[in-house]
Each structure stands twice: as C-alpha cells, then as structure tokens.
Length: 164
Image (cartoon, rainbow, N blue to C red; front, top):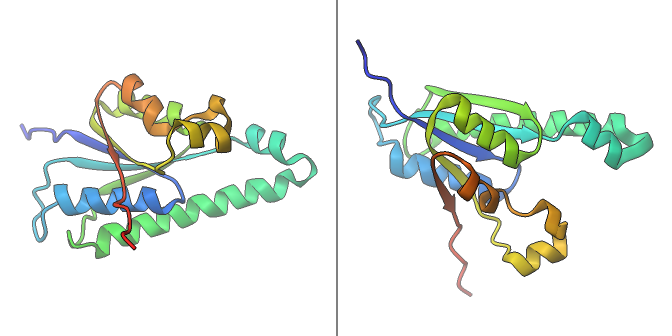
C-alpha cells in the first residue's frame, strides 16, 4: 500500500505577496527535477460570495460578480504557470481550487477537509494599526486568523523589504 503524502495547502489571492509565498514554497519544498515531492500540494483561492458582492455593489452587482470570476480565473492561470515554470520545474501534480466564502473560514475549513499538515499564506505586511486603519478591525488578517484557528502548522511568508 502506497503511503499517502502529507498535504500542503497554499492560500492565494490576487496580491503579489500571495504569489511570492507560492514561489517561496515551491523553491523550498519542491526540489527541482524530481517527482518525489514531500507534500501533496493544494492551492486554494477564496472567492467572495455573490451575496457579499451584491451587498457591496448594489446595482452594479452583475459586473462585480463577473469581475470576481475573472479574478479567480486569472489567479488560477498565474498559479499554474508559476508551478510549471518555477525553479522547481514542473510541479504539475497540483490541485487548484476556488471556493466561495471568506478566506479565513475557507482556508481553515479546507485544512480540516484535506487533513492538511501545513497551511501557507502570504503576508501583506500590515501591522495591527495599519490593518485597523485600512480594513476595519472586523476583517483583520487572514494569517492572523488562521494561525490560532487552523488545526495545522501555519506558515506566513513575508516578502523581504526592498532596501533603497
């Protein structure tokens, strides 16, 4: 009987930080030119629900819903290209999913469903004060939420600061 590999779940959104976290993960956990990777890789994008989009958009809801679908398709395409063309050279045994809902809840539920050993998310680099200013305290950070709530290890990948 073949031994099942542990699952690594990577949360994606349209941000550069999210794709930096994916690239960082591929470079460190998926060794070039081998098919014996240590994890089964699942990439997950949490798309806002239609009801949330309608609530935000009012009369322009149809355009917003269409935009959300277009954004999700773009994220999937970019993730596929990154997996195939990265230094890791052809991580093509990857499962990419789009699930509607709040990213924090979607990721924690996916961890449970797939029995993930590790969840990887990118950090936007906002501290608590900035996050309060820009997003309202209710929303918070996906990484800040998942770290204590996900039933696995959570890796929050930060992009290095560019030195001037």
